[in-house]
Length: 114
Image (cartoon, rainbow, N blue to C red; front, side, top):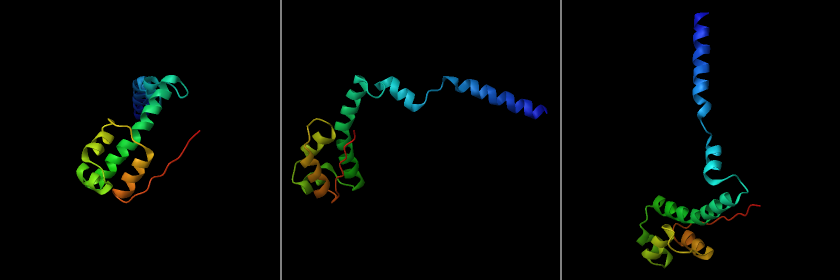
């Protein structure tokens, strides 16, 4: 009986400690606003523009290619690949497609959500 009381006490102590924890979704909402708000829309737009740049960099690194090697395969310059990866240059969809196709020989999937 004593063991049951001890376990119950420990359970409720742990439960009290966890009252101040925030889920990732709640933290994200606090940081970037709830879905549908202007603050969240601004974040989402920035993230969507940033995502292809990260994907290109990850793809290049998985293929063990330097920026210079990827540029040579795609018919562009190392500095342009660097500018893309570092978000210092606007990138057209056709350029992304060419880099993905000519670099590692992959393909690009595009989807729209409403």
